[in-house]
Amino acid sequence: MQHVSPTNSSLAAAPGRLHIWFGGLARRLTGAAPTTGEHRPSLAGTSAPLFAVTDLNGTRGTLTSLLDPVKPLLLVFINPTCAGCHEALGDIGGWQHIYGDRLEIAVISTGEADTNRPLAIEHGLQRLFRQRDRELITRYGLAMAPAAVVVQPNGRISA
Image 1 (cartoon, rainbow, N blue to C red):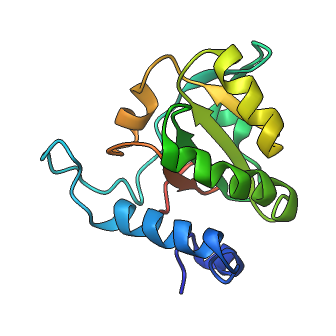
Image 2 (image 1 turned 90 degrees about the horizontal axis):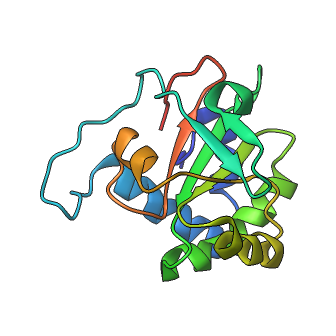
């Protein structure tokens, strides 16, 4: 079962909520219709849209600065007022620690730094960035948060 990418199939084998959440995430990314009724084509195989975001301290991050030369990048999009996002955040914080040697993980949220800071602290998130509104969720062809995209080191979306 490879929900993330062939190079990270061990993620799909993790027990509990991680497996359930990733399974649901994979279904949304690969086939569920968005709530708007609009059909969104898959971005798999295309170049990831470039972006600039800021972390909770105001430091700028870009797609280029987040990409690792050998490890895939998991971009996880959240909304701090979303119950499903809150449920996933504990797992995501754990993924950053457990899988950091094989996978770069960056969380991109909506909302102000003061709204997101408590979430980052509570869930041990190391790389939490903010988008202005939902512009990156839209640019990546996602319907809503929580959602995620895997970007390979070459800048192409794989899942």
